[in-house]
Image 1 (tube, rainbow, N blue to C red):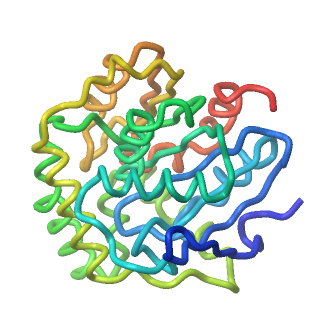
Image 2: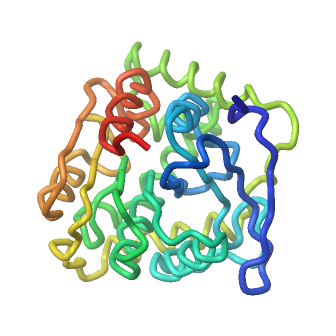
Length: 278
C-alpha cells in the first residue's frame, strides 16, 4: 500500500484557486478529510496517524486557501476557512465525508458540520475546543512565548507548544519530528507569513466570538486531547464534548496539544473503532 511518506501530491481547481492535496487508502470507504493546525502544511501530518487510518479508510488531506502549495491568501475568519473546505470537498465530487480536525482544523471542522450537516457523517476533534471558549483568545501570547523559547533553543516551536517539557514529552517530541522527516521528496511549500498572521487572527477572533449552538450537531463525535495542553486546555475539549449530543472524549496523560500524535499507538485503534468498518 502507498504510504504517507511517498504518496504523490495532487491539485484541483476550486473556484479558480489551485488547491493541493494528497489521498491514499481504500477507495470503497467514506473519505476521511483531514483539516490541519495553525501554521501546518501537508508535511506536518503525523505519518503514523495518516497511515493508520488509511489502512481501513480513504484519507484526503489538503492545504486550505493560502496555505502551503494552495493559491490565494488565507482568510482571517474560521467561517471562511470552513466555506473553502466545503468548496474543496464538493469540487472533488464527494457527497459524504468524515472529518478529522486538529487544533485550528478542529474549529474549522465544527463550522463545516454546522454549515453543511448533510455532508458530514462523523467528526473527530483533537486538540481543540468550542468557539467562544475561554482562554483560546490568549493564543497570540501563548504562541509568542513558544516561538521565543524555540528561538533561544534553536528548536521547532512545536517542541514547546505541542508537547510537555517532561522526560516523556521531550522523547515524544523527538520521535514526532523524526516521523515528519520520513518524507524526502515532493515536499510541500513552507507556510507564508501572511498565512501565519491570518490564521492567528482567526483563532483569536474565534476565542472572543459568540459560542455556537453545538447541540444541533447530531453526528457522532470523538474528542481527544492531552492533559497538559498549553494551547487549548483539556477542560475546553471536555466542554466541547459535553455540548455535542453524541460525543465522547479521551484525555491522554502526560501529553499536550499533540497528545493524539504522542499516543498514536493507542489513538489509531480508537479512531478506527469510532469510524467503523468501511
